[in-house]
Image 1 (tube, one colour):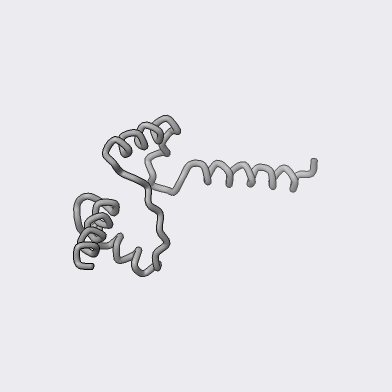
Image 2: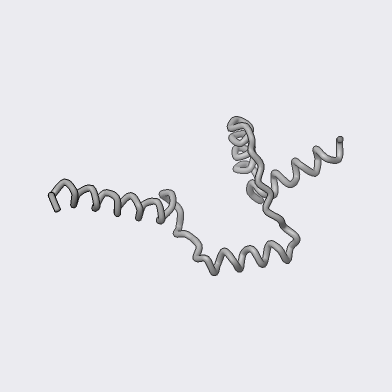
Amino acid sequence: MKRTGLEKLKAAKLVSEMKQSGPPGQAGRESPVDRRERRRRDQALGLVPFAVKLDAELVKRIHALALSREGGVNELVAELLRKGLETS
Protein backbone atom coordinates (compact mmCIF):
# COMPACT_ATOMS: atom_id res chain seq x y z
CA MET A 1 0.00 0.00 0.00
CA LYS A 2 1.21 3.50 -0.78
CA ARG A 3 2.08 5.99 1.91
CA THR A 4 -0.95 8.16 1.06
CA GLY A 5 -3.22 5.17 1.48
CA LEU A 6 -1.76 4.45 4.91
CA GLU A 7 -2.23 8.06 5.95
CA LYS A 8 -5.87 7.96 4.84
CA LEU A 9 -6.43 4.84 6.92
CA LYS A 10 -4.83 6.49 9.96
CA ALA A 11 -7.02 9.56 9.50
CA ALA A 12 -10.16 7.43 9.17
CA LYS A 13 -9.25 5.56 12.36
CA LEU A 14 -8.65 8.82 14.21
CA VAL A 15 -11.97 10.28 13.05
CA SER A 16 -13.77 7.11 14.14
CA GLU A 17 -12.17 7.26 17.60
CA MET A 18 -13.09 10.92 17.95
CA LYS A 19 -16.73 10.21 17.08
CA GLN A 20 -16.90 7.43 19.66
CA SER A 21 -15.30 9.48 22.43
CA GLY A 22 -18.02 12.17 22.37
CA PRO A 23 -17.75 15.94 22.51
CA PRO A 24 -14.82 17.61 24.27
CA GLY A 25 -15.36 18.20 27.95
CA GLN A 26 -17.64 15.23 28.32
CA ALA A 27 -16.42 12.98 31.12
CA GLY A 28 -16.71 9.76 29.15
CA ARG A 29 -19.72 8.05 27.70
CA GLU A 30 -22.04 5.77 29.55
CA SER A 31 -21.71 2.08 28.96
CA PRO A 32 -24.75 0.26 27.53
CA VAL A 33 -25.35 -1.32 30.93
CA ASP A 34 -25.48 2.12 32.58
CA ARG A 35 -27.92 3.33 29.95
CA ARG A 36 -30.18 0.33 30.55
CA GLU A 37 -30.10 0.93 34.28
CA ARG A 38 -30.91 4.62 33.76
CA ARG A 39 -33.86 3.65 31.52
CA ARG A 40 -35.14 1.25 34.20
CA ARG A 41 -34.94 4.00 36.83
CA ASP A 42 -36.69 6.48 34.53
CA GLN A 43 -39.47 3.96 33.81
CA ALA A 44 -39.91 3.32 37.53
CA LEU A 45 -40.38 7.08 37.99
CA GLY A 46 -42.95 7.12 35.17
CA LEU A 47 -40.69 9.08 32.81
CA VAL A 48 -41.14 8.52 29.08
CA PRO A 49 -38.81 9.73 26.29
CA PHE A 50 -40.62 12.32 24.18
CA ALA A 51 -38.76 13.69 21.16
CA VAL A 52 -39.96 16.82 19.38
CA LYS A 53 -38.52 19.12 16.76
CA LEU A 54 -38.23 22.73 17.83
CA ASP A 55 -37.02 25.95 16.27
CA ALA A 56 -33.32 26.54 16.97
CA GLU A 57 -33.98 29.95 18.56
CA LEU A 58 -36.50 28.41 20.95
CA VAL A 59 -33.99 25.72 21.93
CA LYS A 60 -31.37 28.40 22.65
CA ARG A 61 -33.83 30.22 24.90
CA ILE A 62 -34.70 27.00 26.74
CA HIS A 63 -31.02 26.16 27.27
CA ALA A 64 -30.27 29.68 28.53
CA LEU A 65 -33.19 29.54 30.95
CA ALA A 66 -32.18 26.06 32.13
CA LEU A 67 -28.65 27.27 32.89
CA SER A 68 -30.01 30.00 35.14
CA ARG A 69 -32.08 27.48 37.16
CA GLU A 70 -31.44 24.25 38.98
CA GLY A 71 -32.87 21.03 37.62
CA GLY A 72 -31.81 21.10 34.00
CA VAL A 73 -33.59 21.10 30.68
CA ASN A 74 -35.91 18.13 31.32
CA GLU A 75 -37.42 19.67 34.44
CA LEU A 76 -37.72 23.09 32.82
CA VAL A 77 -39.50 21.75 29.74
CA ALA A 78 -41.86 19.69 31.93
CA GLU A 79 -42.66 22.79 34.00
CA LEU A 80 -43.27 24.93 30.89
CA LEU A 81 -45.51 22.26 29.36
CA ARG A 82 -47.55 21.95 32.58
CA LYS A 83 -48.04 25.71 32.71
CA GLY A 84 -49.00 25.83 29.04
CA LEU A 85 -51.48 22.95 29.37
CA GLU A 86 -53.10 24.53 32.43
CA THR A 87 -53.83 27.74 30.53
CA SER A 88 -55.23 26.04 27.44
